[in-house]
Length: 234
Image (cartoon, rainbow, N blue to C red; front, top):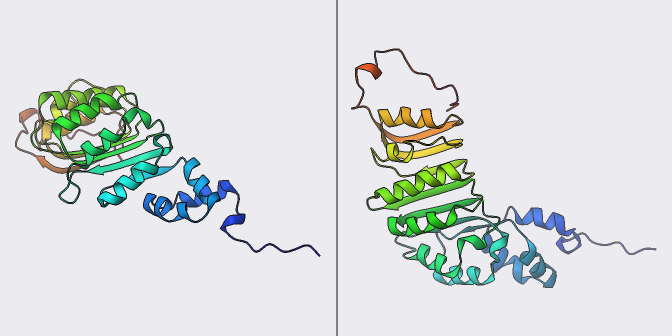
């Protein structure tokens, strides 16, 4: 009589284990699953759907994961320069070149210095990013705004989140036709709100933290005929 196998993770096909890993965070995969057995160790090295979130990582975990990870297997990166993770962004990009992340689709740069952002924007243009979030500290200069404008124009970006200040949006969207579908910004003027929608014909959702209504003129006043942008759904 044939021996009946008891089902376990070890008997599952590799493809199914990959699907399971998609629901686990990188800490669980590399700090726990990775150490169970030789088979799981091999699977963690070939799995190509890693989402790196270092926003709350300890220094030890950060270095351990960076040591084990293969850049070509990463699809998402979150790095942060908050009080609990000072200098993390510069450290991360001293260990890796962004071009190594050939499958990267999402990049979040939290509380990044504008000078560091300028360097990264130069390098990420060849990447096939679909999502970019960059919340900066300090005042943005014209170089930063110009690089953001160029990146939005020339990349495959579909979703963008930036903590803009009033009158900065106009410089980013002054002369581009963007393929953005989803946009989240900080502060903008009423004129800039219209400028965004004129230059983003494919935009589906727009989230604004604060819109200044002080620049409504006679030709674009609340009492005039409304302007509709039918591309938006929210």
